[in-house]
Length: 227
Image (cartoon, rainbow, N blue to C red; front, side, top):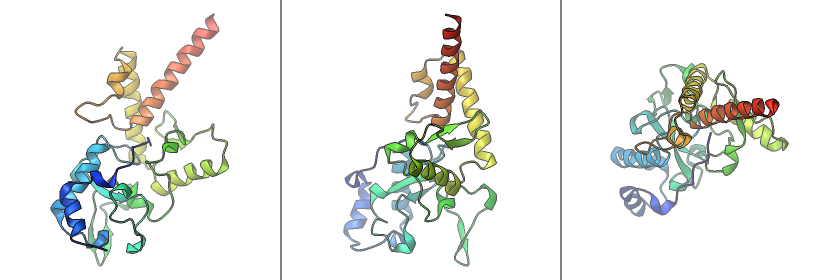
């Protein structure tokens, strides 16, 4: 997970702001206009460089959903329509049956849809950059250098509640790490590997960056031993 600059409410899409002006005291559950929702979600996807706010898998408008950083709590939250409380998370909203969401496979549900109302680290907090580390098996883990017990527990809970180590994510994360290392070893500059292309960052950016940094550290250690 990497830090994403927090949205500013005034930067919300124009049509969404117009809707807010004509719907005082409304909640997100009152927003039924699919075009406005689509524009709102697409604006979040773009500002996140087409990566899920939690797992960093590639997302587009039609493969994601609007996540509320402070949960809606059944509409009780006063922040359900604040643009600054929204982010784009992977897996689109499912169809409902008898009022309950119907996912194709419950076992693959993760990130925003898995979280519920549990407390997890916000991608808008700079702390999220240092809470985690990665193994070359594709697993995300609490940073072994964390000393603060509360931060370590937040990392553990975030991984668990968001289900960031489901098999599909671990496999994709591992592939991203291996591919980044291949590019680096082939001489591709880091700014090209980890920079934006058409406003998109590579999927699993943090894990890929971690893998390259680890490789660089190992190379430096070997050089130090030879000296």
